[in-house]
Length: 125
View 1 (cartoon, rainbow, N blue to C red):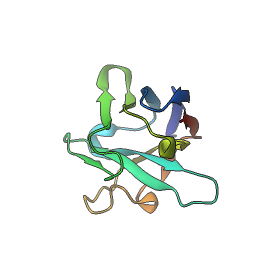
View 2: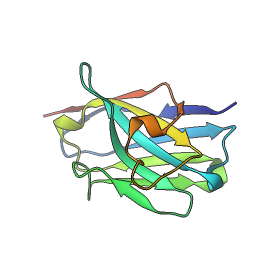
View 3: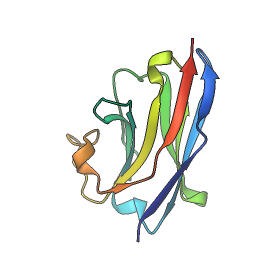
């Protein structure tokens, strides 16, 4: 059974940094892809960043140059380093995993069958 558990969220002022972690169990990353998504109340869940098992990454335009997705292989943890945070980055952030990965679908919500419970990130101005 695949389990994804996010941690590291919280509140920060604009310009600050946070690092999100997603502890993974029951999932073999070397055969798939993982991603970070975020959702504001009343809005669609949007893809933020994705990482394929061969190391290829993809970012939403809104976070390019500020966010970095990576994998801590030793600890089976997916990471999202978020720098230069803006108030518009405020959202619930979710970790997701999939075995069927297409490069054109990496930031699409419906491409991922496995999800964490989400963690709140709040950026104040």
